[in-house]
Length: 277
Length: 277
Image (cartoon, rainbow over all chains, first blue to last red; front, side, top):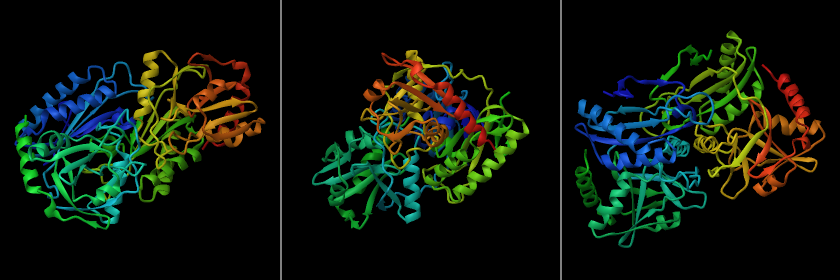
């Protein structure tokens, strides 16, 4: 059963004057839980803190810490396993873009049942929707997600499992719901996210720990669609599904045997288990 | 007193699984009302329809029309005068960016008391926050307004009345809460909004009717900050305040006498009164 808390109260509604609703004035985290514990707790908390900092929430780091503490309590209390979503907004406010000086952040925590699609290989097309470049907000998981909504909608309409998303220069940034890694020789290339995109927690673990420990080089840089089509293999990562291999991108079919998927999965899960809290 | 309706029911809360809150999946209109009637009814309705169309709401135009009919009824019923906000979201949905195929749009209408700052001359600085360029969504009043929130916050912190906002190329796009017009010779220049920005209803009236009728040329094109600083005068337009002259932009002080403010205000109000519904 799905549950929902708003500022610690179990209720499934928020005030209509919430600035998250009215201006996308907030950020969120998609969490995976195991028996009431949050995987990659510190990575999620720190990314939230960074988003709130960029949004100029006063005391961003301590807000993120306090909210995560409260969230940990709720999830432990119901021993939740599966996905959960934590949304933090600037709370209620009067009409107008300017945040009220006395704003009180609000959090919404909701759990979902774990009936996710399995982490099977996915067939992707390339979305016609671009990521806008906004270096000042890049990497953050802010509430404003119009482009990903439209790309996911396009994938559904066209019968793809997921949509690869580019920026306006034709560089690959992500799929509609995850970060991407392309195997080029003995190196995994993952797009630089300094101009747009969301820097995922699993992307960080893969880059900093998992792939180097498996003997792969990791390069964070610009990668064109052409280069991704020429790669030996591609994987998509996110917090809920871990990693998924890409079976096809447009007309290009990848040989799944080129990727040590099971080894990466196992190593990623080991690191995830090590940072459960 | 401020009132709020959600899908026709007078209530001030929305479901926490609303996609407007969770993904900024929706659009809004800021309306000014006079004794229960909506100024520029058709312009607002048509802009909303366009936004819902770009967001791929099925039957966007008829949704916008039906919602505006309902909203007209609520506002007439309470004879509201002053600002109102209409938000339309894709409604509730499960976790995930992809809109549910059976989504039911939701609307939130809220009124505010008319205690707005008067339309006095404003002192502006230039925001350090840029408009991201996203031609696919430009001109629309979508819920995702992070950049304007941050620019308005910066204006407050720095003691400006409003913030001028540029794109990453240094071209002027708007202020944090309105469109801008610069008087250059006998012509008003207003920024082209094909890459970013919101195309306001009052901007449209000013461009198409008011300024030509007063004998001014109107040019919709790129305008650099330098050119705006060199202009004889600048005005900001939006639905609530009509037009406001800019008194200063950074160190540049404009001579307010260079602008026929009262004539423009009167002509704009005449056109607004002619399209009340």
